[in-house]
Length: 458
Image (cartoon, rainbow, N blue to C red; front, side, top):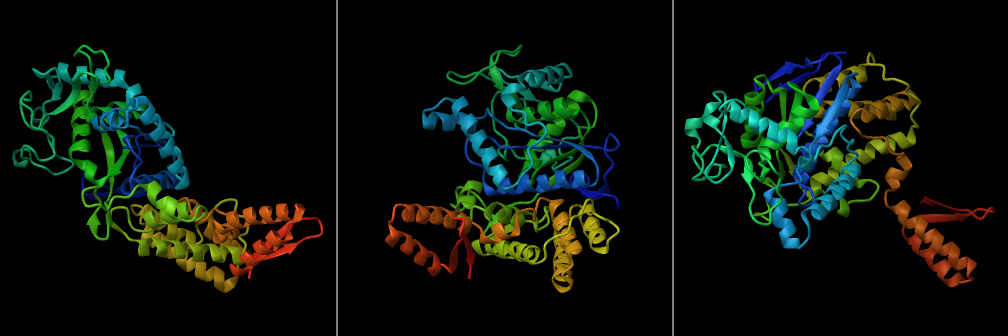
């Protein structure tokens, strides 16, 4: 197979993927802060890296995928206070909701999903190491800060010059800091806040140290791939590099990947603009059978490094396109494919596109060409290849008939059950009413001699 190349944000170049250990790949992705349902911009990022994990597996790599959960944070404490509920109750509820919505998007569950509150020990070990090396100091307010100017390479990921960074540019101004750019590693406990004991006094971790400690503990260093949204480059990922490389004395990550923004009607999504939607908001408005895959396809059909514009029209178009693939798979039943023959011209083109920094627009153009060939030749073998290639990135695996009927099937079956109950109760007027209602929706019923009622579209 052709070699996988990844655009490395650190170097701003496509580079051949050479993992730390032959045949194995480690991937860390910054996960949700569980104070609310995650928004569709986050959903796009998580879906992009689900695609990356699947493709690495297709290439034969043994993948260890880690995606963290931030379950202690100012936003979490504020929301719990607003709701009048314990922090643990809020975070557990939001974690469960997150898992449900990830399943609706057909996202693979990570191999490890560390929660910040369960990794306080590794965080404190890293902070103590940084202090010993002179990269961290204790402020007069009891907080522990990272000394940014003590790390000469700070800014190498985001291409930011320290002298050009202004106090207040996404960094907090605090009299306890030696430099406005320094950031908190450990925050001294305040009344009513969760706290853990440490050599620095009771307190809780800063946000940035969480990912450094969890990723290094679970994957070691250097991590092969570290991913997240484009907006995490600075300050979060920049701070992760400073902390991790400062503490470990070695390279932290070999390949940095960042998914571009998802915009709403050509504007960046934000709560202040009122154009903010959660993944759950969108999924709940879509068909219960089709919607998750429709949204997933919408997220990945554009290149992950290009911004995507969300509109109702673009989402509907994604659903129509996906439906055309399922129509082909319904009309030409796929033959069995034990393994993809990568020497096949369609498979080879698809592989080459995905190996070129996960170029999904080209990969999907190959699938469109293959669909046309299936429609023309009625080849069950090619239909099987179409389904198999889609499966490498988490698409086209549903039963075509069920997908195309969508939520209609759920409603029809419920009405048929109600009609059968009405007939059994000799309420024939209600039974006829249900039949006529379904006929108005172009759904025909057929009562079989064995008592089973089947249905079909006109």
